[in-house]
Structures are given as C-alpha cells and as structure tokens.
Length: 498
Image (cartoon, rainbow, N blue to C red; front, side, top):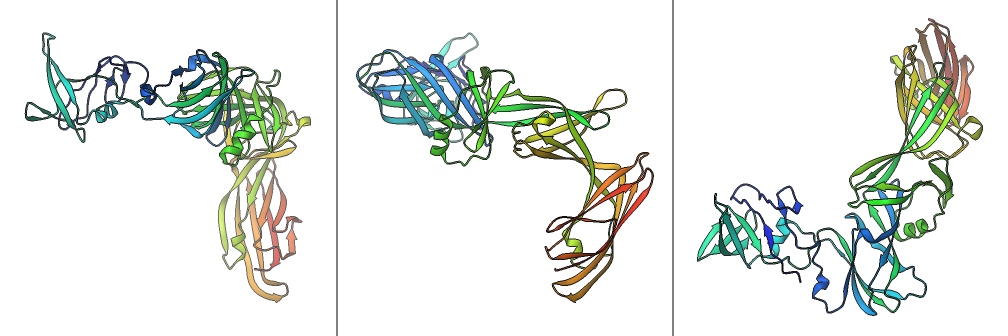
C-alpha cells in the first residue's frame, strides 16, 4: 500500500459544488493529487504483482466496424514474470471495452501462461469517490491564512450527500473553507480503467503477450466527393474514411482495418471472424480492399495514430472521368388510384437523379462502403459549386449508384385525375385515367421519366400517350421528351384491381 499523503483541495459551501486545486488530475469540480497511477485490489494479495502500461506495446491493430464497434489487438512485452501465480495489471484499456470479449495468450514459444481469473476495474478515482471511501473515518481539514500559514483540524467525515458534513470536537461542521488531507489512496481505485489478471506462469520470465478485445465508441463512415464537368457527363470521385474515436483510449502507430457490411452483433462470433483477417496489401491505393467473410475489408497501407476523442479522415479511393448520366424523374403515389381526387398536385417538383456505374470499365469497379456522396459542378467561371448530396448503401461492383440530388428549378408538372369509376370486368374492379402536364422553362430540351406506382399487380393499360413501359409488376413508366421552353402531356387510362 502506498502511504504518501493525498491532498484534496476543497472550497466547500452548503450550496455550491466543490472546487479542487492540485497539480495532478483535473475534473469539472476540481483536481486531485494521486500518489501513483492506481491502487490495485491486488496490493493486499501475497502474490507478486506486475503492471503493464501502454508504453510496453510492441504493436497494436485496430479493426473498425460501421456500427460503433472495433476489435483491438495489442502485443506487449512482459519482463520479470515469476514462476507460479501472479497478478497482472493491464493498464491503458479503453473505457468502452466489453470485458466479456477479452482474450489473452502468450506469443513466446514454449511459454505456458494461463489465466486463472480476470477482473475489469472501472471504479475510477474522482474527488467524490475518494471522499466516499473515507465516510466515517478521520481526516484532516487544513486552512491557509494570508501569510500562507496552515492550521489543521482533525475531523470525522459523516456525509457527502449534497455537501460534506464533519464532526470535530463535539461539533458538526457543514462544509469547510479550506482543503481536505487524506492519509492514503483508498484501495480499489484506478486512475483509468484496467484489466487485472491472475495468471499462472510456468514459462520464461520475459514473454510477449497478445490481448484482444472489442470496444464500443470507435467507428467509421465513408464520404464521397464527386466533381462533375460542366456538361454533367463525367465526374471525378474521391472517397474518404472518417474515423471517430470516443472509446476512451489512444492507439499509437496502429495497423488500421475497416470492415464494410452489416455485421451481426454476436460478440464471440464477431471476435473470431475478425481474427481471421488477412494482411495489408501493398500501396497504392491508401486502402487495399479484399473480400472477408460476407463483407469487405479495407486495409490501410501504413500505420496511423488514433487518438482519444479524435476525428480522423483518410483517403479511401480516387477515380477520374467516370461516365455519369443526369435524369429528371417524376414519381407518382399508389394512393392516387384508390378513389376520386381530381387535381392531385400543381407545380410538382421534378427530381434530379445522377446515375453512376460502379464498373471497372467506368473507372471504378470496387465495393463501395455506405456513405454520403456530395456532388459538385463547375460553373461558367470554373469555380466548383455544391449541387446536392445523397446517401448510398453498401454497393457491390457492377451495380449502379442512383443519387437523388434535389429538384429541378425550371421543370415542373401538374397531375390531374381525369376519371375514376368502379367496374365489374374480372379481374379488375376499378378504372382510372390521368393527365400529367410537364412544363420546361429551360432554353434546352429535356427528357422526363414519369414513373407511376400502382397499388396492385393486376392492371392493364387501356389508353396511353406516349407509349408506356411496364417496369415491374407495380410500376408503369413513360419517357417524355419536353422541348425547350415548351410543354408535354402524358395521358393514360388503366383498369386495375384495388
């Protein structure tokens, strides 16, 4: 047990919170000077005790998942291991660690290091916790006058609930204008979370160990920047990884891997899968992609520092002159077929959709993690302007990205139900007719895709202008050319089952 004096500076009143002043730990309420980094429950144990700090790390690898989860694997050097049983304080673990997922093994050939017991210590030192440990015990209250002379009063701490209450010389004191001096650091408090193992060693005194565990508070997401040419026919695409670390620990010079995919949160299965990852690929690019289980794994080709409470961005990919197609789309609602409505909408917005093929021949052809794609385009002065953004799901290679960028300013439409009636022509029981009037105020012609969603798979077109196309069992589509500063109208009648 460490018997250095612990000094807690306390400006206490009945109403206001505590104010601590000391050179070591700083809290919202003040500070604490601690004799040593921690006080282990193992200090009272007759067994030998060793500390392993993050400074003894030989290597650390971090595999981050999309769902606020990361697998950490640490390799550390241990010296002075005695034979037989011992207690090992494994310091520097994240505050968000899941202790149920911890695994420890020795990497030294021929070593036999067995874990007999594991404890996760998270009873952390704080001013409030320190005083709680001294309830009912005697301590010192120290006042310093203007000449810097100290006056010490011995008192028994009776309560810390809403303020400190003491008994001294037969009197009850509520608060104290000075500071509190504790004789020692209470047992069982740690400055930071720690894993405490009781080990049995029958191997050498110097070993290399590996500890792996899952922690929350560390996750990543993808963001993409697409810069389109003035004609919106090609775009340059840059992908970025944003890594957020709120796990409660830092990881220096870490091997970083990212898993893209919807991973089932079954902890043991996830840990075992992650251990099977492959090695990092050669550069370039910044991240090398490879299949992993039913997901995709991205490995950074260099080490990086991941600091606590840090947001880090790393380049994921870069591709140039990818062909893109801009489309104008007007979508209908299946509810418009269920009764008489008349005019359904006027000046309806027409959506702007940009399509991009994730194919090798287009300059991409790699699995794209879910994220936000932001589109920029050059104006007449050559400056890039923001044109819209959309979120994509995990997209395999050879699939098409469909990005809704917003609504067209100069293209609007009216939707009118011109007829609706019940019929008894099996298998249909209703008939509806619509007119969609599209107005183009641009100085160039456009083509608008009108896509109608039907409420049932049983339907039949009776009239159509222009010709429609059945996309699937419940979707009818019209491709409508609209002249510059002109108009176009879609008319159709359909028999359907409600």
